[in-house]
Length: 100
Length: 351
Length: 178
Image (cartoon, rainbow over all chains, first blue to last red; front, top):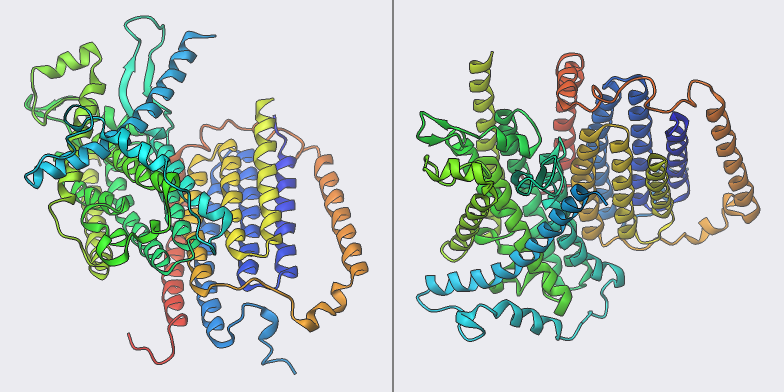
């Protein structure tokens, strides 16, 4: 029998891995992938708690999270394509126009 | 060991074995049928009337040199055909191909003929079929060649576009059958109307079946929708740079996908293993009584595969923009309308 | 016992794949490793009696969104990343700082795990309070989605439409019509 805390710990580790990816990586696409890892970790938490409580609300929230992740990935990738056309680079540190 | 467990493992092994045989036989069947449609014999020399031709083909492919282009990605170049074939075989996991059987009374509880019976089986088929896109995309990209890249991109874009109409036509069948499990959808097609016409879903959903058939053909990159691997335009598309075993896995994946689509169409629209012909024949109760449903299933799947091969060698090829326009602007609205009308009629009769 | 084994296998696979995602230099490998991580999470969902969500994850996330990522990586021919010269001398990249940060992060994870395991409520097996029949039923899922959460459902359809229009608009080249 797997305790609920095991699922939560797995989810916490995945979330921190995603957050580390967002902070440490210097490639726009990898940053977007790390955001997807974070959203997935949250999905796992929701479904685990939903199973624990015995109703389907956790899974329904997971659907909405997936939908939002899809929309955000689409818009984010469109932005990445538009940015790449200007600077020919995927490193976020090259976009320094607004820096003083 | 428990006899029932042994029989279940034997059924799984038998299914896998038959799938591999199907891909070999389809090679021969395609060339023979193509030959007869072009008013000539197909392969004729190897074995009686060319029956051992697949063996010759496979031996030839195995003995060819294994090439890898210089700039090709080391891991992805080998992973791509493996992914294609794995997805093709795994998609057959939740397709049932026969009723329950007790092996003539040897077993206490009947064993279902099929690899697995999950209560969301139809979604499993759909999910694993969408994984097949990765094999083609990776094959196109990792070959480090322009023809392959274009072929891979076009093929995967085509597959994703037609997946939507495919899923919507499946949703209409799920509505009629009342469950996502393929076995239950087949069992809802038992019996006859007025004692004459079999209770198959194709008579209730003719538009849905046409959408499913067209989307299925487009999903497997076959027949009039095979522009990405057209020999005249793109050399060989995404499998230009492949040779020997890695190449052999791509057509094998394509044939297994064809077989899976045909099997799912038979299960969803043609009653699976219930009934042999669209109208009632005296053979039907005999089939039910002696457990020969799998033979009826095999006959229907073979008919469907013949239809696939027939379409390939009869119809001209769609151009790529015509193909995509057809998928998005015609097929998707038609399948959505089909779903709406089915839902409305179902609600009217079951409110 | 087999339940715990399945859980450890899938969660180990998910964590290792995610760690490799953020550690790879080649973005193509990162995308494929994320697909592997998603497949492992689908396995975890099936173990949590949520087969429909697991398959929806595979169809939508791994079958469509990740293919979109793959297309963008292929079309942009995304170069391997390398830190700009000034970035290497950034104070946050000093070895002492990164090692200290790693130790702190590990300490945080250990504390979090300890706190989660101590709570009496959370240490119960995940299937102990309620049976899995209602949770795994697709019919129940549809019923709740279309009655209690109807507004959110309609709102997400508007969201997807807006995202689609926005994405098409932003990825167009300047000066292109239609």
